[in-house]
Length: 114
Image (cartoon, rainbow, N blue to C red; front, top):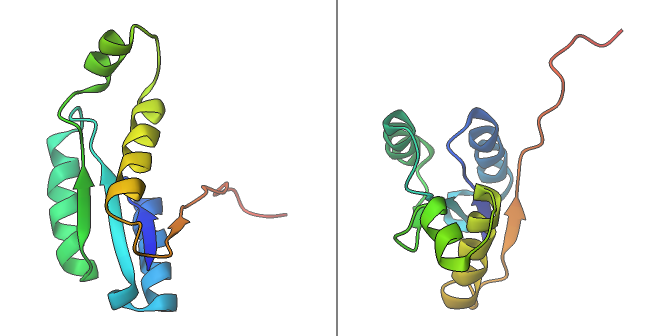
């Protein structure tokens, strides 16, 4: 099973496409860690891309937004901290039966090579 960390951006969509092409739809899941602070258009794109890609999109959230998490933990943080926490919880609870791999996109410069 391949787990693609799916942010809803164009690079995570490209990573999902590449992973599906390489490993097949039956072996891929998309994982979206919802901060509950995303733009409505992102949620629309998630729904549409799940249908277009033909793979399951797993959405996880603990019900709080990052500011509530920071207040509860009495810390100053960022949304990456919150997402890592959710990913760890998912791996412990839902993906323990799979050998999972995280696939992520790394943005390269779009400048022409000389």
